[in-house]
Length: 437
Image (cartoon, rainbow, N blue to C red; front, side):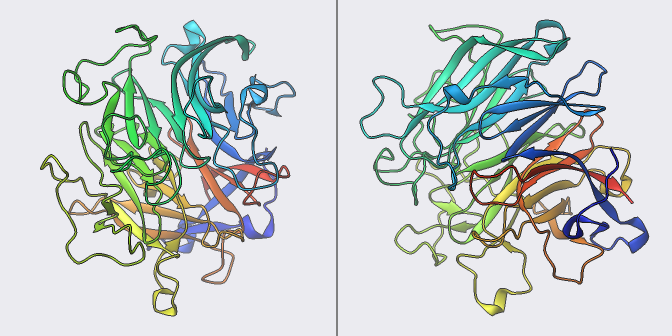
């Protein structure tokens, strides 16, 4: 499926100090989506991939391109989306069971209408559901749905919604703080959701989908940090705002990476540890956060939470343009919303081995000014960050698309998912593979 790239996505990307001969290309592999959100390769040797579209569908990509029939269609189960407008709801996550080849089990996270009996005035309910599929035909049974977990959401944004199986066999969910700003307002309580261990909002969750316990349709790993303590058993880590991208490293120590979208000043990427508190709404990036003055970094930033436990710092941050829009920051890496990616573990681009490849949705909310980024471990806890530039364009030119999500195949190669709109309209969404020139 080698195709000639459009002007704004042709030629290569320069990575740090790599010379022109070591450039990279984005090779287009699929198009026709509204907002592609996730990519999963089926571990059956066929090379087939499942591609999630935010509007509620999952397509099958084979060696000959996209298949006519869908793998899954949950559009009838979604809350009514903002057609033609910005929306963070929809079909947001997909994870195939580690034994999917044998049992056909898979899991999704989607935004359903507010459940019956849900809090009055709240917006919708997030479902983490299990389905079964015919693996050979790659066709899901829509009627097989089993809702494992429902999380009521006060606002339409900050759902998070990424799910992934860890090396321990448990299912992880990145849950946003419920929306709005400052983690306050209706549905956020006096201290916000992210720091409140009595709510699943603003957390990284971990459940066992292979067992049941306590009347739940899933089990609780015995070493989850709040088991037997004052807090919800499902919680693995706290202090998240809007985790937009969560992935396990295929190699190394199999660490869990999670990008958390900032509000006004800083975008960040974290390595998630069990029981960690990542700071929101008290911290943003490496800094304190003041709800009364969200575009000013407070002088006396707290370093410990209410229980006296030290906050976990991110491995990197970059500037949010809302709080850094003056000309003095023009040479800095800036954006509006971090898009989480993957640690590169492929063989095609050895120069990227072990680097975290991710991006920013766009430097401007109204225009397609997304960018690709790479981070590399350094001698300290903070990773080195750099921009991946397009080789064929004058220095400083843009990618020419919104960077919506990333994917990774079973060989460790990385895919970039983009679209041309900041809203759910038109089928401008594309999937690209990062390859060596």
